[in-house]
Image 1 (cartoon, helix red, strand yellow):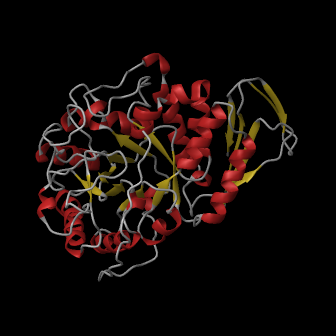
Image 2: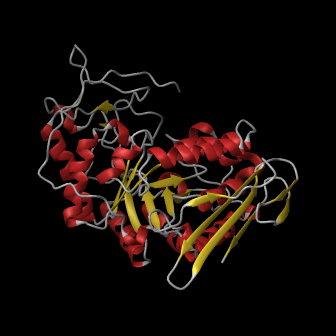
Image 3: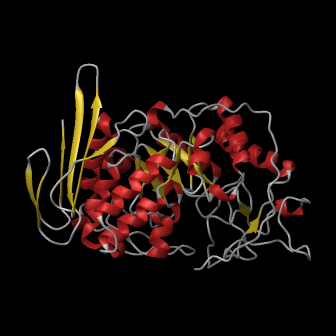
Length: 428
C-alpha cells in the first residue's frame, strides 16, 4: 500500500555516556548464513516448541544465524486481522502467548546455542502498539494538535515513538539489555532502523557491546547504510540489489544495470559494511509475492547469486521446503512442503560452498568481486580471489541471466554454453 508521509519533528541529538568505537564484526559472522524464522508460519503449531524441532534441519543445511521475528505480545485495540502484526508490540519484555512461554523461548534458545547457532531478535524501536503502557508517559510519543497518538505511513496499528525523550531512550535500552542480559540472545535485527535517529543506535549499541562485544546487529535500511554501519550495525539490507534481481528476472533490467549498482554501492557505502543479500523475506513474500511469482525460472540462479556477490545470504522460512504461496501476515498460515522442489539440498550445497571458500566471506575478510569481460551481454561473469599465505582461493561464476540459451567466451578464453537461467560456479 502507498505510504502516507508523516511529518516528524527534527530529533534532538542526545549524547549518551557509552563510548563509540569503530565497529568490528564478530569473527563467527564472516562466513555465516542467516535464516529468518517466522515462528507463526514455520510449523502447523506455530510455537517455539515446534520450531525447536526444525533446528537439526537448519543445522544440517549449514545455517549459522537465526533471526527470530518479533515474539512479544501484540496490541489489541487497533489490531490488524485476527492475530495482528508482529511489529505492533504492546510489551517489549514479555513473550507472546501465541508462541508459548518465556520458558519455551529459553528452551528453544538453549537448544539453538547448544547446536552452535547464534540467535538474534527482531527489535521494533520505531513504534509500539497504541495500547502499550508506555503511552501513559508524557513526551514519549508523537501526538497531533489534539493530543492523539500518531501513526506512520499506513501502519494504523502502531504509534510513533518520540526520540526527543531521553527517558524513553533509557527505557528502550533497558528493554534491549533485558533480552541480552536475562534471556541471552546474541543481537538484534532492527526494524525500519533508518526511521530511528542514528545517534540513538550509536549510543545504545555501544552500551550493549560493553558487556556483549560479540553481538551481531542488522539494520533494516539501505538509504542510511553508510552512517548506520559506522559504529552501530554490522549489516544492512540490500534492497536495491533485491529489486534489481527481480527486474532482471522479469526482463526489465540488464546485466549492465547490476554492474552499475555494484559500482555505485562500492563508492557510497563503507567497504566493511555487510550487505544482506536475499531473494525473499517476510515483507516480500506476503506483499510482493513469492520468489517463484517474482522470478519464475530464475529463482535458483538468483539464490546462487546472493552467495557469489559480496555480503551475507539470507534464507527465509519456506525457502528450504519449497513454499509456493504468500503467507498470511495477520493470520495463522503454514508453509508448503514440496519435497519434489528439493531446495534444501540446493541451499545445503551453497552454504557448504560459502564456508569452504574464504573468497566468499563477508567483508573485510572475503575478496572483492571483479568483473570478467565476455562477448555476451546476457552473461554475468565474475571472480573473487583471496590471496593466502600458502594457498590462493579463487571463485569464478558464469551466469546466464536470460530466458534463452546462450554461448559465451570469457576474456580468459573459456567458452560456456548455458541453458536459460543456468550458471556455473568454479572454485579452488
